[in-house]
Length: 60
Image (cartoon, rainbow, N blue to C red; front, side, top):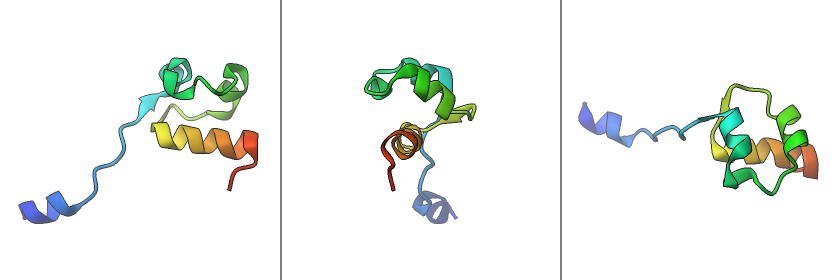
């Protein structure tokens, strides 16, 4: 049973949106726009960047 649990990928750590908005990870985005785009309570860093890129840069 331990092998099955170990083989499952661990979910990315999620952070409160307000902390992400203040983090260095998202400093390249305008805070006012980012605040209106990131409406969920928490995101992983990759999820937040993907949402911002999609909305601001017409990402895929």
